[in-house]
Amino acid sequence: MKAPNAAGGLPIRRGLPIRRRLTICPTRFQFEDAALKRRAQPVLRRLPEFFGDPIRVQNARGLRDARGPVHGGSFLRERRIAFNCSRQEFPRIFVHELAHFVWLRFGNPARRSWEGVLRTERSAGARGELGWSAERRKKELSPAQIRTRHRRWREYCCESFCDTAAWLYCGVRRHPEFTLAQYFRQCRRAWFAKAVASNQLSI
Image (tube, rainbow, N blue to C red; front, side):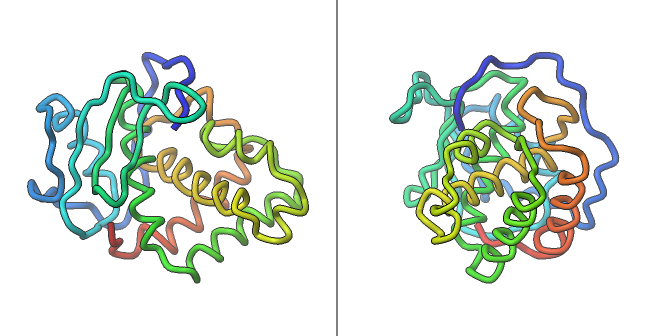
């Protein structure tokens, strides 16, 4: 996830209608920093149930990608998530990076269903996104890339899924990166309630 200016004092979303709650399993995450574990536990309680091998969670100062500094990174083969973000941004970044593990194992029918949501938005002229990672990719897409399901379109679908998961489950109600119109947010919420929140997810 790209690193814009961190927003402090963000209000907390309450009463999120999630059907099932996760019972935190200490072995599911291996935190290298006790502070990260404390920050993650309230977020984990808001997430749907999931299962999988342990994921290592660590701080990584100076974390970068090809474009520059980033708040966090998922290393899927290594089953590792690295963070370089403020305490205020941690819940949003944590859910986003964890969602990459979900997307990897989500299966093609579910991925195509999510693509359908995004295609409907585009046909309706929806602007904005629920995170900069997705919005940057959305702005760079061409009609041909969408039509042919080009790699850039598929990358956008992945980032949009992860940013939407972060918006839903991180507990933050308002953020400068939440620019998608309310109508489309509610459509995404409904899709997640059916495809994500009501199922046990593999990470």
